[in-house]
Amino acid sequence: MYYKKNLTKLEEMDGLAPQVMKALLNLLHSNQEIATDNARSTPGQDMNSHLDSTTIPNLEAVKARQKATWESGDFGQIARTIESVAEEFMARQPLNAGSRVLDVACGTGNLAVLAARRGCVVSGIDIAGNLIGQARARAAAEGLPIDFKEGDVEALPFADGQFDLVVSTFGVMFAPRPNVAAAELLRVTRPGGQVALANWTPEGFLGNMFQVFKAHLPPPPTGVPSAMGWGDEATVRSRLHGFADVRLTRHIALMRYPFPPAETVEFFRQYYGPTQWAFASLGVSAQAALRRDLVELQTIYNTARTPGTTEVPAEYLEVVAVRS
Ligand SMILES: C[S@@+](CC[C@H](N)C(=O)[O-])C[C@H]1O[C@@H](n2cnc3c(N)ncnc32)[C@H](O)[C@@H]1O
Image 1: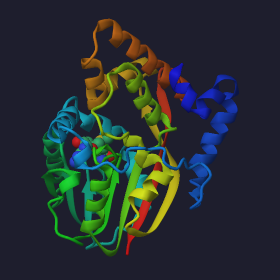
Image 2: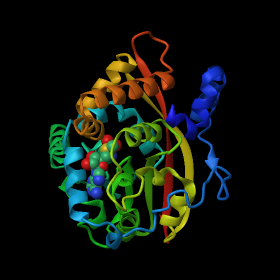
Image 3: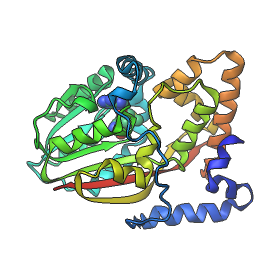
């Protein structure tokens, strides 16, 4: 299988599943801090990390396509399955009453809602209008005064230094020009303030899921780097060079579904925009091949002990950067 080439964990799983499980559980419990010169880094892995608007032809078309992708399906259904990940992530961030917090690429507002419940003054922004609609309804239902806006990570409609804390789970990583996004995060954070991101790693479950898409789909638009560059230590450090201090930690997000791997793939096909678009852009037999490989991936990663359920440990890189 093509995606195994990139993933030592999966290679080991062929005959050593208990050892892999042990390693994953160790990682889950230790959340080991990664040293500056971490040997797992692959410098220059994301060869496109320097790209800007001049190197993406048809930038507007790329953005329109991304907006349409995330507005398709219903990411709100997926967001509910990662609320516990949002809670774990936010428990590690400084949420003081009165702090000004921005949830970037907020989707339905998983992080924004948690910050507002703690008395923070919260804004949220996302490119997908339907998800911002859900986020507003959710905040209204709880009586939380969150300012949700539809907009782009690469052109944040906020003043310089406006926020004490800028957060994003699995969102900023999808902007097509990472250096433009990084510059915007820096700009809107006050001196001494903090940016905290959760980014799927290239070696983890989501990194492999996107490798499956890549193997079945036409190449992405010219000049758009892999979203997984935000999960690579060396790439992240190069993008956040404007920050005084950058701390990186690997974590595991346990993604649980009350149905078996094949139905989990169907759940993603129905609700997760990128999966829905991948299927929609293929003919019938190519869809069957994509489905087969996605089910195989979910099955390999499945650690659920209850028959008929799926539990996938998905690795992410937590990035905490302090602005000078
Ligand atoms: C995987 S979802 C994560 C949503 C949310 N942060 C969460 O954890 O539930 C990715 C989100 O990034 C948003 N997004 C992608 N590109 C964006 C951009 N350029 N500007 C703003 N939002 C963007 C999508 O609309 C989507 O809501």
